[in-house]
Image 1 (cartoon, helix red, strand yellow):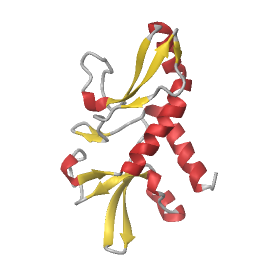
Image 2 (cartoon, rainbow, N blue to C red):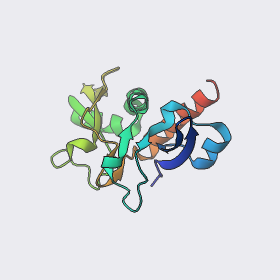
Image 3 (cartoon, helix red, strand yellow):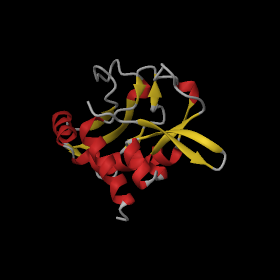
Image 4 (cartoon, rainbow, N blue to C red):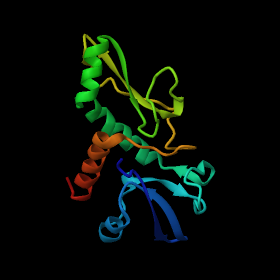
Length: 164
């Protein structure tokens, strides 16, 4: 499984700050930390509990960016297109990969990232809707987009870092 987040300590005018980011620490120290790559901030160190949601503040810039990336890329992914063809009409849900068994009947609401509308077995263009109940951090840990969407997210961050 792809590691989705890292914690890095960054010096800011107010002192040191711990940020949760999708970029590995060595990349941050070499090339900086763009705001779209900051998942959120920690109000105190996580310690031994990687799911201490009370010490994590999400970054709305990252959340918007993540959903924009999902909206552009999820409808093109083979798995989503296969599910669209199977259901015909309705919605295909994008689930958080931290969920052990993605099943819409038992899926915790905070693990549904969003949904794509489907008509005639095809994803409807520009129909992705983010789930406002999705949580970046739950008792099962930080979000996980799965390998394909994570790769799309990383590619878009790298394109921005390269001036693209």
